[in-house]
Image (cartoon, rainbow, N blue to C red; front, side):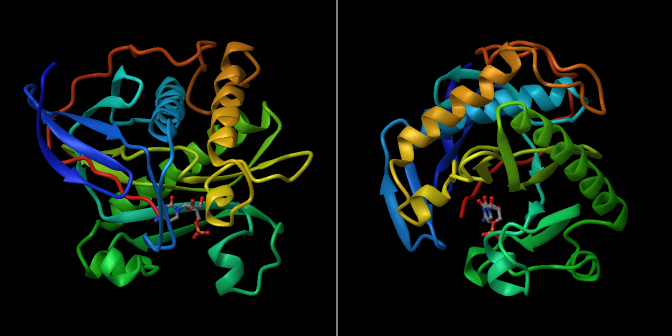
Amino acid sequence: MKQKGLLYSGKAKSVYRTDTKGQLIVEFRDDITAFDGGKKDQLRNKGSYNAEASAFIFQYLEKNGVKTHFVEMLDPRRMLVRELSMIPLEVIVRNVAAGSIVRNYPFKEGTKLNPPVIVIDYKDDSRHDPMLNDDLIVALKLATLKELAAIKKAALKINALLVKLMAAQGITLVDFKIEFGRAGKTICLGDEISMDSMRLWDKKTKESLDKDVYRFDKGDVMATYNRVVKRITKTAAQKKVPAGTGGKPKAKPMTAKKPKVAAKKPVKKSVAKKR
Ligand code: C5P
């Protein structure tokens, strides 16, 4: 597998072409940003911590019947992925009120949201990712109603699986952001799921275990990311994760290789952007 030219560079990841049709390489860089790029830093090992968390979670989801772009890890920060035609939506699932919905709506921080609340934003930095509704999504031709239904269904399934994964290590999954793309007609999970894109609280201490540590200067960001990766991956090693809705999770920590994913029609670019 040879890495070719740069296809796209986001705030924290770069996407490269490869010599294999339908496959791209996502490189997780050490850059970290917050507040629409208003706060920026480089933190050593951040890329590899997020790559490891993402790879582990993608494999866990695949084993439970969720289609993702993950193929395998090439090294600690480079992930081989299936090429997707990305849909410019940021799908946020919330189990507990925190962050922007507390700022924008009369929710008290920490209020449980049951059923979970799905919020979909338009992925467009120049417009500050405005919130969409179904009518806007269809009118803007970002997705069809059928695709939107599939996206919401997948988002809720991913949420249920991740809530279990985190709970097994004493972590509350407050919320997270995911992005989807098309592989032919199939909706497939792309981008990443990491400490940058999830809001995680320690169940006992309520301590932040995610990018909020960076956003609000709450402590040693990389020490936190490192601890979280270890906690998450330990979960599976201990066989504590109950089976999800789609199948049986395997008790295997993240490894470089992943079980083969059924071949899909190659489509266009897989990309990533972070808040
Ligand atoms: O800021 P807000 O509360 O809306 O974020 C909700 C969740 O989505 C958080 O976990 C945040 O890290 C994630 N997010 C993200 N990228 C964005 C927007 C939100 O990863 N562009």
